[in-house]
Each structure stands twice: as C-alpha cells, then as structure tokens.
Image (cartoon, rainbow, N blue to C red; front, side):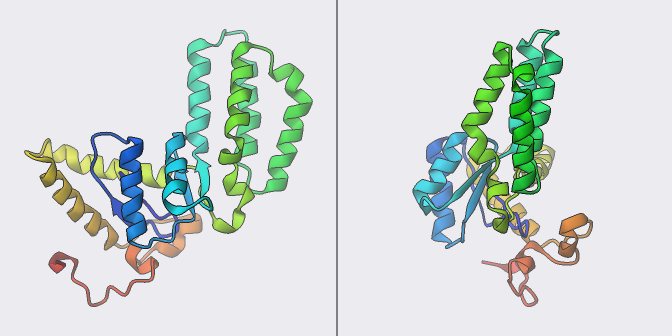
Length: 233
C-alpha cells in the first residue's frame, strides 16, 4: 500500500500486506498519524473502508473522495455485461450526465448538470440497469463530489497518483521476479520509495509544471542540499 501526497507527489508512507483489508489499512494509517502527517482528505477507488478507516484514525473531519474514474468504469462494465442492446445508448447517456456532475470544475456547473438530469430522468431512467446506476450515484454522490464541495482543499477527483506510483513499483518488481522472504521485499520497497522521494521531476505539465526541477521532498519543504539518501541510517 502507498500513500501519495497529491500536492507534491511525495510518498510519506508505504507498507507491505497480503491484502488491503480494513485492518491493514488502519495499521497503515496509524503509521501515517505517528509521523504527524497533516491528513485532510482521502481519495480511494471507492472501497468504503478507506474513508471510514481514515476517520477512525484521524477523526471525523477527514474529507472522503471516491475516484470518479473508478465509479464510471464500474457502471460502464455493468452495462456492457448486463444491459440489453436496446437500452445501452440511454444508459450511456445517463452516465454522460453523471460524469459531468461529478467531474465538474465548480459547484455551479455540477448543479446545472443535476438540473438537466432531472429534466431528462423520464427518458434516461427506465430499465432496471438505469435505476441501479442512478441509485448507486445517489448513494455515493457526496463522496464523488467532495472535490467540488471543498475546492479550497484541491482534492483530486481520481486516485491516479497512487495507481501510477504503484504501477511504477510493479514494473520494478517484475524485473526481480520474486523475493525469498517478505522482509526482503520490504527492504527493497523501502529503498525504492526513498529513491523516488529524491528524484527531481522533469516532465510535469499543466497545473503541475511548477514541480519540474524539484524533488517531492523539496516540494514538501525539506532542505535536501546536505542529505545523501544513499547514506541515510
């Protein structure tokens, strides 16, 4: 498991576990709290116990954001596997409306799309599948739109940062094949994570262009000018 700071791309904590159970997540978060990390929001793929665990460890003030990309993919996958060909276009249109609601830049834009959905509900919500999608959306709406409700927190609406970092780690691990003991895997990931925190960004674009030329630790406010990460104890 990895925790990635969305503002800097830094990795304040990581841990090795067989599965991402609620207990594993709570232990991971407790380590993060011990480090006095100023957690304000959690972005997850939609698994409910990420948010509940974060609030259990850090308090009820933690904002929970579910990944909009994962939510939309779950809906599309269910449509492709269970919806009739006749209803698919209407179901896809329903998802189109929901996508604009949950991925809007501002609250007023999201509210406008909600009004449009309500006006077209009699056309878009007829089949059993469409009713299921709308029900799921209503159940998760407050978590899918947290990034809009709290714009001052700059919460990403996807967990792409974590998934991209995990993807990089997996590529490295594949070159090794296997470890003789889980402890060896832990040591390797410790070294890899430390290396990542000291590597300068070079190709960030758009809103993240300011990162270029700096390391995640520097962006976190750490002076690394006199630190040799290969000699840390």
